[in-house]
Length: 308
Image (cartoon, rainbow, N blue to C red; front, side, top):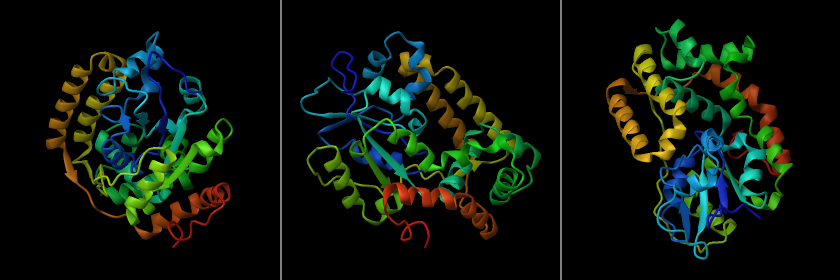
């Protein structure tokens, strides 16, 4: 059974992946009268849980309203939790239900790359500094060649984040398969109500016709230039470094995020440039075996959504 602290019991966790539609899922499920989600979507629980003697008590404060365990399913939707199989079992028990949201890993990679340029964080900034004259798609091409062709491990993180089968296997060693639900963003786009119905059934809540939005947090923006990216990075890195403080004093965290978003209004620009075909082919080859591994794991073909 999931670990309890006071009256709080986490019934389900959507544990990833970044840029795969978790914000869309949050916006839909929070409307359900039998589901209670943490406010603000991302609690970043594993970034700060070890800073407190009773982290689940702090987590309880992240939820709206009073705890009503007999009426609701309590859940977390955290796009980075796919890295925490052992910790999730420790804090929430291995009986907790898990939802994975997946997206074509090549599309996810490009979207995550643009997110990093928007946030101004990570090793990508070193690449950005050396190639400030390039467009987003050209810089992405350099980025992919650095890792796939030149084997530069400095840029491995986002590539490995899209290796879904690696992370799924880690969870399958700890959690029973009937506690795992896999959702594809492409199928969510094609049949939103049908996918939500499946999730409601998986969570054992009543089916409701919830208001849905196909795209949330699409992320089609990047920093205007390298210096804007560095400024954005100051705000984001400071927030991450002091995450525990902002969790204890959420109003301060909300104030900081508001200031960051005001800076974003001046430092970001729209970006809808597509990756070129050569880069796409390179990335498709990189992820091919991972995709086939996922097919074997799920015992289903992905030809209709990822190989067409």
